[in-house]
Image (cartoon, rainbow, N blue to C red):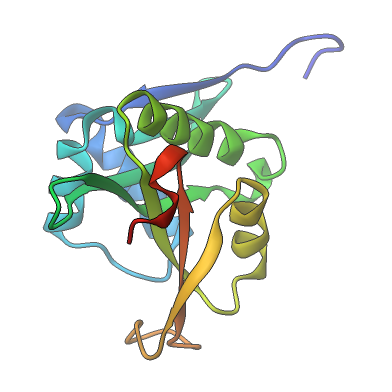
Length: 164
């Protein structure tokens, strides 16, 4: 980069025409292959699923699913959040997560959660910086990766603190 040149990080929505970029990123970032339902949920979530660009290069993404609870409230499930290794530590993951946190707050969504493999200390400490906490451990959640256990990591927003 030239001295003093600001590098821009921008977010863009996921649509049919750029869905392949999300698929390509996922194949590089995660040890799991995602099915058509994952991509349908990602598209259906609208603004809750974003691609991140660093100087116009697609380097990361967040993909969410909106879920309705029994009481009618909506919660956000973060299916994936990932940034390519050479671009980590530049604020891209933070920008992606903050986007979903702000959008959830604007839409009065009181709960955001995700699953994290129990040995993924980087992810666990990343989410804890944003006020997420481990709320559950699920044994044998993953089938083809070791360890197979995961934590459910949850953030409650606003007055929804005590609702499960």
